[in-house]
Image 1 (cartoon, helix red, strand yellow):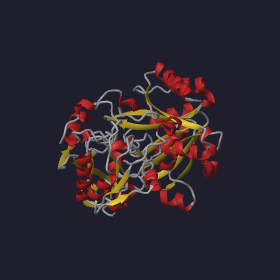
Image 2 (image 1 turned 90 degrees about the vertical axis):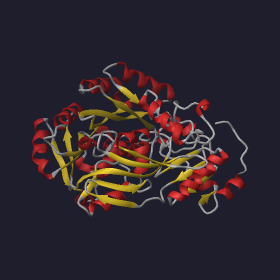
Image 3 (image 1 turned 90 degrees about the horizontal axis):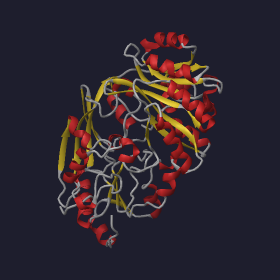
Image 4 (image 1 turned 180 degrees about the horizontal axis):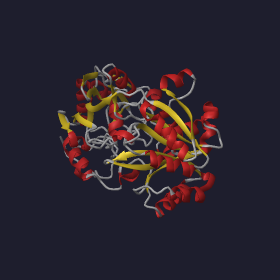
Length: 455
């Protein structure tokens, strides 16, 4: 957005009554997410800081802040828990950051559904619905901090996707209420497939106020690790376990070379064995034991989350998805990562090729999940950082054979990150919900300055 002269004292007066944060240190902290996983984004986003942060507690707070942003034509970036990895909540053009974490109430729980404010942390939602014998269908590995609004605005799937698919699959997202950014903000209600207009839109087209998502009956999952001599055995086991006959909530393959980053697991994940981390229904454990043995492996650990905590061990979901990347980066910051989607049906020989080709420059990590009703596989690879040119050489090589597609975590726009095409449905909704183009500018290539209009 073009630079404008803003009377920030006058803006502060218009924000009177709201929780406004102006101190440089807090503004800097609340303008970041986990983009530091990427050395490219670390450099690119280093100086991106909000001019003011507004913490909102009510719908009226959001309305006031949105109206002020529209009046002064200020960039407005919505922030939840800040656990994203791609700079989704980083203000590229300054302006206001709208922190919705105080909007964290569980509004209503019913059979198969829960309605919550956007700033509710997903672990807290799980605790609330557990009292009714129900559970969330999926959540990110960072669910202790991640908010439901942020997960829907920036997420794709997560723990539970092997059972319930990805977020955009029918039946997972039920309703959403969204505030527009105009001089007189309005609330738009979305239901069913309409929610795709704001799902994975990086908060570029409306402030999510509250959402209703589907629930399933609660299961006391068994967290377990299966060990195998070769990574190909792990992959073959994962393909075989991806069946409705085995009730799973997580199926995550991790290269043996990650073992030093999971030192607290000791003999349960030794450096000479590749691992499959799982969350399984108790009734499926005999089938999993037999399947692991049939593929040359064995289950080294099995217990409920409470039992693992009592042993000082992490739950399986903290050894999966991008927690795997985090475990390595906490020890050695010379790594970064790439995300890969594979052609379906999945051919493990593609992974064999990559192991032979990249050696110790790339550590393997694969998630098994469902999307569109079909089982599939994707990777969150740990990649040795050798500069931007090397990173893009790897991307080109991976995409050159086997039908692989890279979801690039080293860029900030929705389209370049992996969507590949502009979602015209989301841009059309932006014309209604953010007609001046103030929301999270720079995060979608589908919006061009000529689309903006006064409202």
